[in-house]
Length: 223
Image 1 (tube, rainbow, N blue to C red):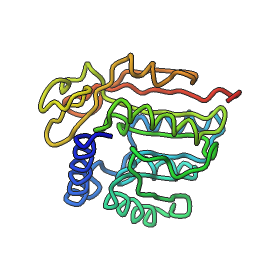
Image 2 (image 1 turned 120 degrees about the vertical axis):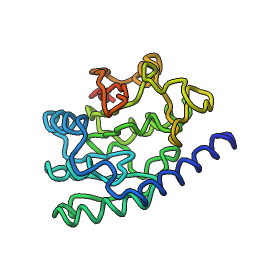
Image 3 (image 1 turned 180 degrees about the vertical axis):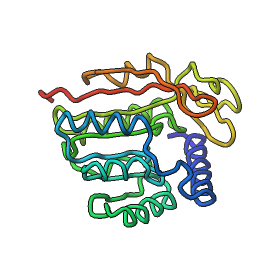
């Protein structure tokens, strides 16, 4: 990783720390639409353990726990995860939720083939380089069981904020203090090499609106 990439990552980490600290529970308690979809898909596939990457203050991780899954929620913000743990206790699901401070640039703190499903709502389109995104997806593949599902969402290059604001190269653009890596379809397809790509679903979220893809890919049962 170059010094400029690390610097941007550290700036974004501090920005999210301050954001969660200043706006506790900023996304509310209701789960995202992708999480509702993912829970149904994971249940159909027989999953029991879910790893959520970039869980923040936990609206989706807590939803998975309420739905009966065992959840490991990771984020690089200790402030967000502290809010998640408090909410898990208040909702009576603390026994089904574990948290871990984790930077998506680092290897996942899990054994090979140790989880049934992985969910990431807009984590892959944070301030990560293409190389770092590929490395993260390789780690997801490592920790998933054969047949395991990976459902993630990303903002893409048809989004209104693409090429707006401060450009950092590699399709990363910063707007309002938040840096986003906007995905091309070519990147989605490249990340699915060696997987079974099940779906690339276009949807919109928020007031702009943000334009996203919800991607579902699975580990082939033979590896």
